[in-house]
Length: 130
Image 1 (cartoon, rainbow, N blue to C red):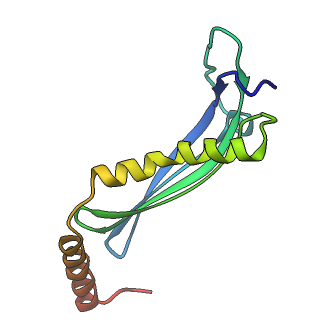
Image 2: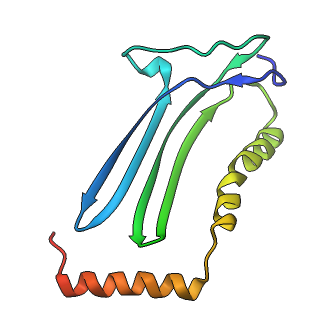
């Protein structure tokens, strides 16, 4: 496989909303189309390309109004024989988007702490079912 050709990542994605003790969490999972047995739609790409595969899960949990945590676990197979230092640089660049989104939506830390504290106090008053 050529390391310089564009990559196509066809995937099957699903999501679920989970509400527990008043907290909302969204779980988004994805895997390569080869793992999915249902109906598939293929992507047409003109020109030479390689197929890559990616599997992962994102968990987005509401901590307070306007405050959430995001957990991102992802594995990608680029179908390439690139040396490790080049792959490391590529992965670092590809994952910078999360930091850019965080900077774009960054809020005052004291304000966020206050909102999270208020939610925790309210939950303590109500009690949490186990």
